[in-house]
Length: 111
Length: 114
Image 1 (tube, helix red, strand yellow):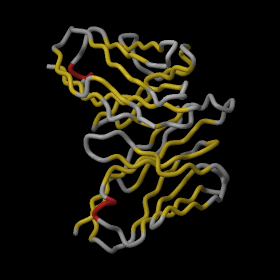
Image 2: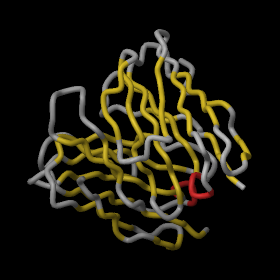
Image 3: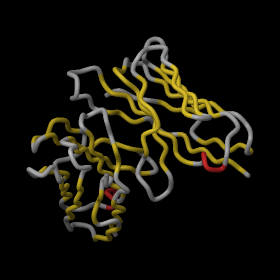
Image 4: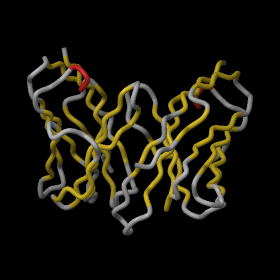
């Protein structure tokens, strides 16, 4: 069974731009969660989608948004990028919220 | 917001030694998971513990969930260089089944020296 895939793997953007990251979950998994990982803050929960509905949300500003499609694939968008948004963005899928199988992540660098 | 503190934050030991990593919180969790993350990759789930006092073994790794379901430990016997990585604990909040949100710990970066 193929694992969680994320595209792109690496991305460089400049301040003020926006970015869209994509995640394809493991087949059959309806829950997709997004996390931000930085050396200083560790792994922080962004939001979770289940059957196209946002079910849980972390404490991030409205510049961070996401969506899930009917095939369970998910995208997250960050608008008006700031230097502090540089991080590894991880997507995880599972049959339930507590079951997390992670993808390799997208390394975003904001300059 | 529940907080999970892991200790130690960094640990560097010789191959063959034993070690224990701790994960502590003041909150009760319905379940707790341990992950290992290697550079350039996402975390990989090692184990899930659900019952207070539960002990699970995975080869040289022993995981224990505290009786009160507020803390957990990971013990590695005869550490090997392949055990090197970032170890993360994650607790699921007590809520409706299937809708728990995971809170990740601060992480323990383990280095095993050959």
